[in-house]
Image 1 (spheres, helix red, strand yellow):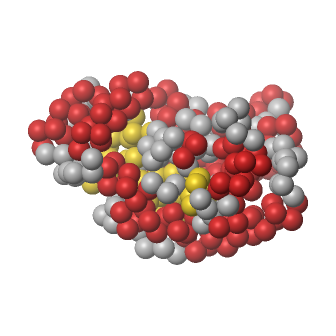
Image 2: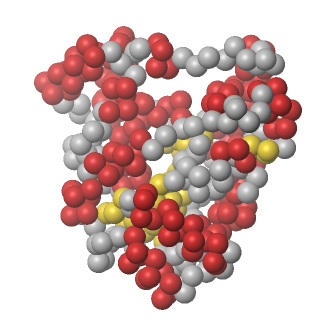
Length: 292
């Protein structure tokens, strides 16, 4: 059995992948794939991690956990999706470090099912947009200026975060993608999570990109895809990209960045660093980067 831990991250997927997989629950289970129900698995895994504190669960405990959270007797693949696996949003960025608890929490997660193959999956996001989005989750608790003061944006490094994750759980490969690319590679993301070809079998495969387009654009795109079936994943991506370019709703993709201390120069510098780091991450051992 393979365990896939979709650990988010915060302010990226917003449970879109989980909702799509749960929408296709019956079909996936016929193929031996279980997208675990969050209401069932999250409290059970949380309690188990607290009890184990990073120690490997024995066979009996692993079997008990699975009995508590899934109904399929012999699943081939189980997907757990929770953007707060590593920490709550307020602790995601602290003291110039992205997810400072990853070195501690990754083994806690991995050792829930040490007898089974496991992998991690999550989206990266440009700190230039991630930081304002994260602060919006708890803006009633501290000002944006106070938040910037305690997180040191210029020292944040995704390369460092991935290295700490890989060191903490070296036997678990990591699948990543950039949040900015998600609408264009959504079928590939879902395929990476559930392990099957998605474009022809998953209901709701275009829901994400449809959120970003006008109703007219969605109708035209669906009609075009129906009458002109794409010859490949790349061909499909080009079609979706063309319709998105023409029919995108600006309010759905633009983010308000008029915030104190959040200057154009700062945004540009953070973006340049992020893009350079993504190239480094793509070359890391044990890492698969999904990209258009």
